[in-house]
Image 1 (cartoon, one colour):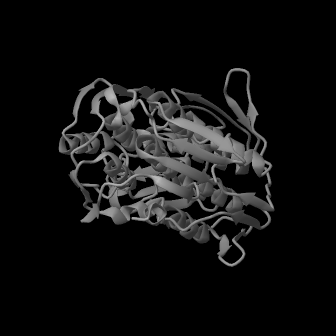
Image 2 (image 1 turned 90 degrees about the vertical axis):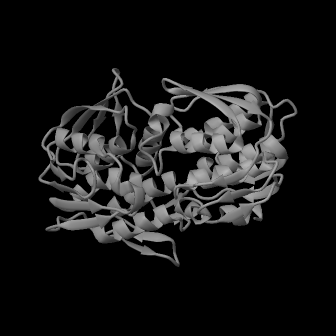
Image 3 (image 1 turned 135 degrees about the vertical axis):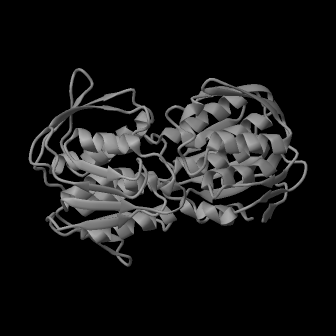
Length: 410
């Protein structure tokens, strides 16, 4: 158990690197024809998993120069990739790996072994690959070639597998025409497209909203700066909104990251924000107003939004919660357990939760279920706690933000 005593956020922090951005850049650098220097890369567990995987594909990463040195994209007889617990690595490398082999096996660890990967398997089959899985769970074996050049894919389960399809398409022998229906987490697909274009990939957006991606493309990028992480920063931002003040460096003001939505929500809560020379300043709300938001495109914000709702004085509503089950934990269920511990009333209905905030929480023991976002949100809850908070496993923050507790001085 890790004990977090009540505290106030009065900090100057530099944001951690965005693993979402870094993983996209690592994949593209591995597919490039020349070396790419990645500035700002950190060593979270998900980044380490991606680095190990691109090494298996044939790219080398020089730690001293922060450079990915790719080999030519050539077919190997078979490849096995262990993505550890990185859902993004799984859902993208399932496609990208097929640029290097016709027989790919993917496995992982932890909660990823128990998650449902039916959307991934379906899209792979749609474009012509043969797929074998353990009831849509890992391990997954993919073989053959992509034979379909025109597909319509369903994005209701998220955008990561669709990002994988887009990342593979420029390296196929044929042009690809992709339409996407019911897309959730749309900003993250836009992130993928934006980074692909940074590397020189041509993607045409058609008048009907579908995409034309020419095949047989070659790409290169001499140097790229990894963005700061809005997902990790959201915890500090909420901490300041409910208890104090924050000076936050390293975030991109006009980022496409979906979790930038946190700024709008804390302003509805009554907090004040300002930017000066690309530095974000956040000051505590004097009103602690309840809020309403939809997390369909930013589900990773849910745990910290629950904490913000507890800090409000009134009824806050969070919509889009049906996307929370297939994460590192069932985040809706886990955060309801946390609300019970905190003695905060709530009501669940179809795809939404109403939380009756009182401005403070009781504290107590939180079972993190080895989920980094639960651990970070639980820590920030101590800013409004009457008693200390204990986390069952605080080390899980290393999945995305190894320096989280150091940045808070905990």
